[in-house]
Length: 196
Image 1 (cartoon, helix red, strand yellow):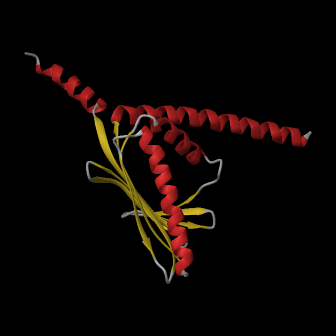
Image 2: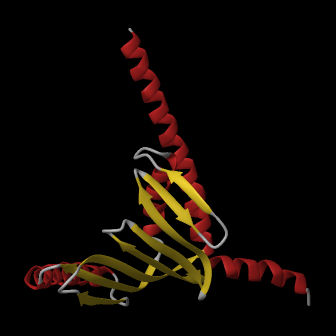
Image 3: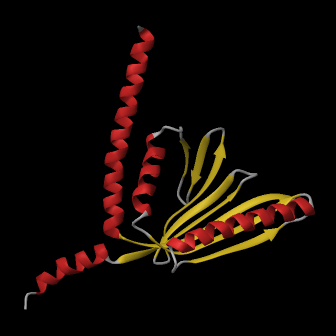
């Protein structure tokens, strides 16, 4: 028996077997900071803290701190939007949990805000449950009645194959380059029209 044939078989198997990804995101809207992480099989792949400061995003991980200036039409934002659209229909949602802590320094207003968040979240989760019937959803709320705080966190578990990730990544790069080129041509045309 030729065992070398097992190597491509296992490579194909690894590419097409779904991988469990855990995504975590948290932010403090008042302090404009937060953190996000990506875990594969409970092993940390990415974990970064971020701060928003005068239109710039400051990222910090265990090794270094970097400042990223992002414009609305930047290539990075276009890529993120295209990649999320490409990968959206290829993933299977397993879990989606929302955690929040709100307080408006007034017990009545804090309770009302928490009620609106719960109602909106439950309506959203109910609609999502129609399209993802096997997924688990939950809202965990904390209300701070005597202080000002707005903190949100999301924990999501999805499954996707490595092939779909690589395919979506390559396709997103191609589409992003096309969009960037067309925007650059539009800018050049508008500059020429202004000059004449």
